[in-house]
Picture 1 (cartoon, helix red, strand yellow):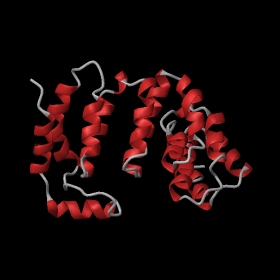
Picture 2 (tube, rainbow, N blue to C red):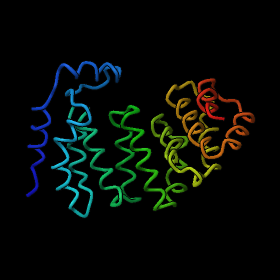
Picture 3 (cartoon, rainbow, N blue to C red):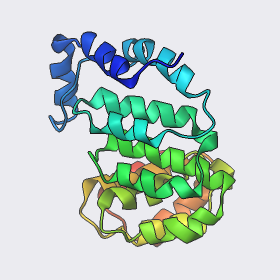
Picture 4 (cartoon, rainbow, N blue to C red):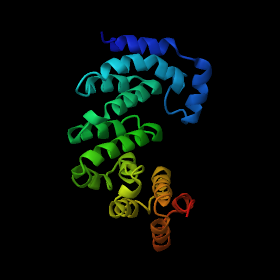
Length: 219
């Protein structure tokens, strides 16, 4: 029998640890309230519920929405945990909903997880890259732009370097920390696969010092 979502919410709140919440909130620059549940105890509470939910064939976007609407950050983490468990059920039609999550309660901890999740979708539905993510490169929202830079982070030799170059060069004049950090991170990660390509790219383009420092760390 499925555990009601209200029971899950109550269970998470009943395990709140105010002593830890303050430190977690400080780490996230006090952008969000926390219950004070670190990963292991949070998963101990949520896994039985999610195990039952994942028996369903389709993603329950109402569940995701209700979790996302809760104020404490652990609920957004639970929504993302659920989406990762259901990643094989996600497809092109779900991209607008994922974009809405990127744009809501935006910070690196949720956005980067969604970026990798979108990377999983693109592997199975490569047309999403041209049909959707090309436009994200110049989206008004900096977090959406960040996803266009990072979604290939785990692709290694499957990385589309032409697309990565386009995403980086369209955003490399920004002063936004989280975009310059993403550029450096993407280049650093790809340098583990093809350091020569990254060295050539770094030498051939003018990037922010943060991107240069991060991108050239291993090459």
